[in-house]
Length: 457
Image 1 (cartoon, rainbow, N blue to C red):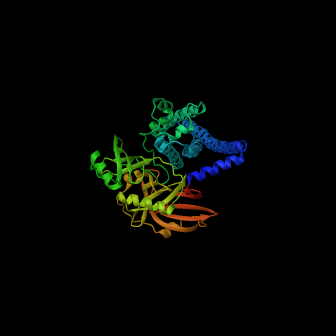
Image 2 (image 1 turned 90 degrees about the horizontal axis):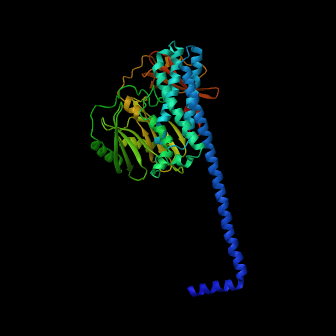
Image 3 (image 1 turned 90 degrees about the vertical axis):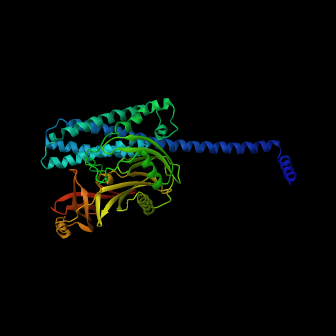
């Protein structure tokens, strides 16, 4: 059979002729080269577009951080309430813009999680201070907090400018930024070149909350943790508990971390995936405080409801059942879902857990339970005012869609029982919170529908 096939090839060559055969092979080879060049050109164009986007975001990030630094410097010396309020409004806007820029940049979660949190805290602090100034307080009462923030933002400004200059001078490349935290960067030269990037995470590792991190998230972190009992476990006991709860295939104890809540830190892989996760666990009671991991999800195979179920199942494995999903934010084939505690069917926004789920496989990528660990406890839920009385305090043209009782954190590191009203007017949706004891208006949010989910601003 092989001989017949070989004979046919020889006959084909003879009929075609050496010259024509050479032309045929040259044409095929040329087409392959041409196709490869087209693909390479397209790849370079797409890569350049991505890097141009990174460059714009980095430029805006550096500019916004510098602007925040300058505005806080002005805040340190102003004594005029009108100018103070204008400055605080500018800090609020620019800190939020800097955080949005940072979220686009290809840093690893480990590198920038504390910076992102710090910028949110700066934004929330400025907002809280605006309210306090309006209510008659003096900015001089907050000199210590302002000095602390300024020292931190000054450091961040210097580091971001250093990174920006390194990128402009081509000392580091965007591709290298994407590899931060990856085991591929092993050489001392690479570590030295990327030292300015690593400073971002290191500078803010020990920084704790100013007031709270975001609307109803990671708040009241200056209070003593309510959910911990004082039962200190050894690192081996915690490791054994992790193996039992999370089906861990590999685990390595890395170090201990001091702070308001002392932690054990591990690196581990869970059954069913090869993603290396950094797991922070409280020494007290062995509660999982945070999980951080880096992996890109290349496609979207599951919907939001399935992702919520994956997250809820994960928390059930940790012994957390009294929760309900509230809001979510979707992007890059990932979704971050906020869960709040439930008691007597009342939502407790103070006890918050955030879970990021990969939409390709349903893998849990990050888990943040600091709000829950700090605040979770039994509450006395007994409003002195009725929901009907609270409705009378609302703007009369607001069309109410839903209403319910809840507990929300306040800007003064406390929490209140409130009625939550969701309504709309003039094509805008609002959340309005009325104190269930005093009937005072506590908070108002505008709800914005975005491609990634609903945002409250």
